[in-house]
Length: 74
Image (tube, rainbow, N blue to C red; front, top):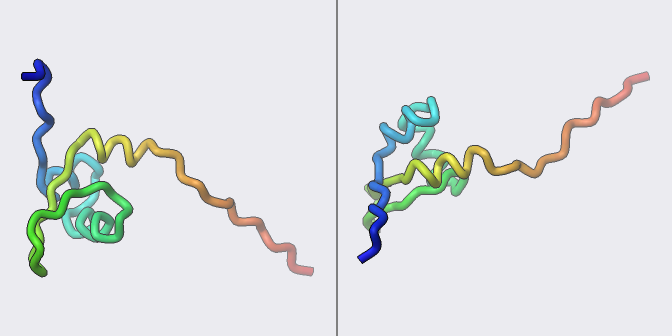
């Protein structure tokens, strides 16, 4: 057996506290694939669980975006 312990899953409320977001926003981001989450169940009322290490990695991951170029109006 491995000597390391498994990281426990947390619910959307705890994930929200960790990221300073409300529960609803956490679930919206998870459903959209913008936050790593683990849906449990196949019905319409899925339960989502998260891991703190995955959330932390998602937050520090570099985002590829193009900065807005100001338009010159003449």
